Image (cartoon, rainbow, N blue to C red; front, top):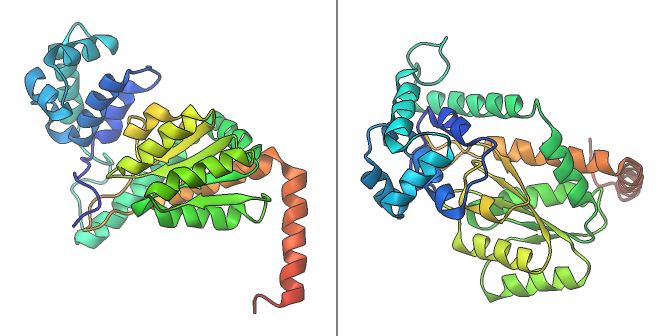
Length: 288
């Protein structure tokens, strides 16, 4: 069973551009998310069909189109059709070549290329790094498919931060551990939330915000359901061409974010890294 309910269509990044810099309501965010996830067919759906897809009312779809600056949904649909007609993928590569595995890996390369372009403006990552660097302890949330990424990030973050706590399992203990971290002084949380967006992850973000914590989210798009609860959203596309999702770009972004954390507290980071290296040599941890 694929850990993603839908296959992302090639023009999704162009559809995402329609929403950049626009503050959307939770209902409008659901509509935007549905359009992104069904980018290949969205241009041919009626307002009623989009409403059904997003589980909202038809007037909400009309208001959404107007919030984007269009006269109504028909004008937005024309724009979606222009995007669809513009073609898919890299324009200079022609038709897809290679077998399924090769195409999936090339799509991951495209995801990394888009992430690199996105990081031309590093203000968001820099702000997130500064925010997270100041939290003692730093809480890292990642459930289900995101759990390995949360652990990967936390492993390295613990080398430069004195207290990193990973929340990688749900259930009633999740809220307990979140409350304990808050009581210990945590004022910020990094959440990695990937498709299919675990309900418990969103509930934990809601709890964190209610407790007064700032939230940074690494997720697959700017209109992910997790974005509603985030102070800073750092999007990185997820590959969905294989049976199970590929998380190359989110993992890369997590390391970029850790670099930003180190840059926010350079003296402390360097001191802790040197202390770790001295300890590693004394204990002969590595052979190379």
